Structures are given as C-alpha cells and as structure tokens.
Amino acid sequence: MDWDKLRIFYAVAEAGSFTHAGETLNLSQSAVSRQIGALEDSLKVPLFHRHARGLILTEQGEVLHRTAKDVFAKLAMTEALLTEGKMKPKGVLKVTTTFAFGTTWLTPRLREFLDLYPDICLTLLIDDRQLDLAMREADVAIRMTPPKQPDLIQRHLTTLHMKICASKDYIARNGMPKSLDELKDHRVIGFPSNMQMPFPHANWLLETAKLESESPNTLLVSNMYAIFRAVEAGIGIAALPDFLTNGQEQFVQVLPDVPGPTVDAFFVYAEELRHSKRIAVLRDYLIEKVSKFGF
Image (cartoon, rainbow, N blue to C red; front, side):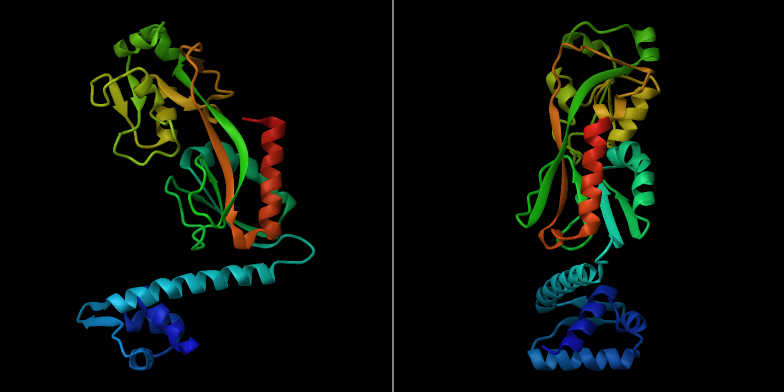
C-alpha cells in the first residue's frame, strides 16, 4: 500500500469526512477524495460508504482503520523515543490514574517533580476508566489493578489499606457501632453494583456487613473521591483507602478490629517505552515519595 494514501485514509477515517480530513492535511476536498478512490482501486475493495451526512467505514475499511491506528500509534511512540534528549529527560509525558488517587495524593506531589525536570511536558489524565497504553492514550498509568495486556510493564508501587471510617460529627450524632451487625442501623456509603469500580474490594464494606445496596440506609456513589467527601460531610460510614484518610483529623476509624482488604497500586507503561528517561525518572520519583513519606 502507498504510504501517503494510507496516511490520508487514516485522516479521513478519524475525521469522518473528506472536507475535515483535508483541513487537517492541508489538502483540498477533491484531492483527498481522489487519493481515497485510488486506494480503493488498488485494493479492489470499498473502504467507505458515502452518503449525504458523511462517511461510514465499510467492513474492509474497519479492518484497515484498526491496523492503521496501531501503525500510527507505534510510529508516534518511536518518534518520541528518538527525539528524547540524550543528556536529560524531556518531551511529553501523559500520566493517567484514578480520580481519587490523582486528585488527593498524586497532584499535590508533582510540584517538586516539575521543578526537577523542567523540560518534561506533563499531562495528567484523571479518569477511573483504564486508558489504552498500547494505543498511546497515555504513556504511564498508576492503576489499582494489575494490567491484563501482556505487552505492558508493571512495577509494584505500594499497597493500600482499606479502613472503615466516619467523621467525628457523624459519630457524635449517631453513636459508634460496636459490630458489623450494628451497621444496619447506620447509613453506609458504597458503590453502585452495576458500575465499573476503580479497584478491587471497593464495595467490601457492604458485602462484609451483608447490607442491601438498595436500602434507605445505603447511599450509593459512583466515585471514590465523592464517597470520601460524603464521609467528610458527616453523611455516613464508608470503607476508604488510607491515602484518602491519613492526616484527616476529622475522621475516626470505625470497627478497627475488623481487618480490611489491601489493594496493590502499580506503575504501568508499554514495553516500547522501557528505555524512556521521562518514564524512568517519574517512576523513581514516585517510589521514593512512597517509601519515604507513605500516605
């Protein structure tokens, strides 16, 4: 396949029209259309269904688009590695992690990192979804579950501990439960069961106490940071990871003799980036912060 035609095909498939792709490529609409027609002729298959509202990929077009997307992602990754400075880390570094961890622990600790490495252009993507590292949606992920993709490198970062917590205000108004069974007389906060949870055991408390998820005494919230804020506001009791509760003087631990689960956090990146200095310095920086100061 002609490389220029493949590049134009990819732009059209992403844009959904010849006109928008032409604007991206700085080509006329007619020139883009001719190149796509020539590519279809050479492959002897139609790549797009053409209609008044735009373009839709054919089945053959979908196959080529997936391959082209993978090729261009690999090329972008290779370009980043080749242009990275030899003497000091530099370039774009996209990091993704969960909303709660990224908002409360990671972000406040990035100032020193940015001061140490001023040539790194850092982008922080706060998202409870697992972005696709192989497709360069991000360069690095800090995840609370080990990666399932075989072509990703993982480094154990730390182990988180879940604790049952409430605010002092809530306990003053409602009393301290003495057993898991007494939690049925309190408002307990957890995740909706049909939601993708940010890490394993996020609904541990509801399950351990055998509480109904749909009950007047249960508040369901689809975000761990929002659960933390609900506990902080005195709304109820919840199981929270230690990075959210440590140093929070308004919090008290409920049922400290009930052991909570642990959650492992991993520093994850693509195999192709194993020699990236940007990733190496961030990895080492975070490991140092966790080992010295914990949460």
